[in-house]
Length: 171
Image (cartoon, rainbow, N blue to C red):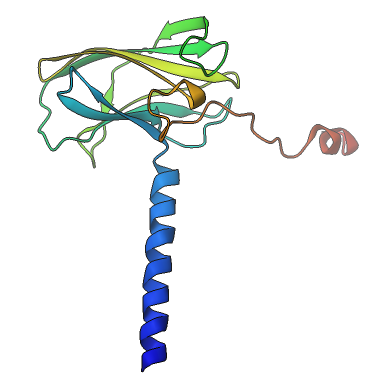
């Protein structure tokens, strides 16, 4: 009986540790208090890790338990020289289209895009949520203001089949 209790304890402990690891890696977002301390937000890519030339989305989550009825946000995507808060912005473009509210999680918002190049990306968010003014910039990787949590910079995806295979078979 003592063996079973030790086994059950070890199983439960390892299950909890694995669950925590999966949640933390699946939620690779930067956590930050925004709106002069009024809201707790998470910003990152909808799909992590993020790859060049693979459709993804700006992912914005309000962690507070509030019923968001009114929001008016615009998002600029930034392509930066590096993943640093002081990096030069090489390109900036306002994301077109409407911010879509997630049907299953009403405090989660997305705009889909296609990151064209690997490298450092950021998001500048401006507008209001429930009348609370928002003007924040989030940068991937080392550009985060929260070193404990960040979202990934865009990586190069592995090609398959490789160019060598394509040429070998004349495709």
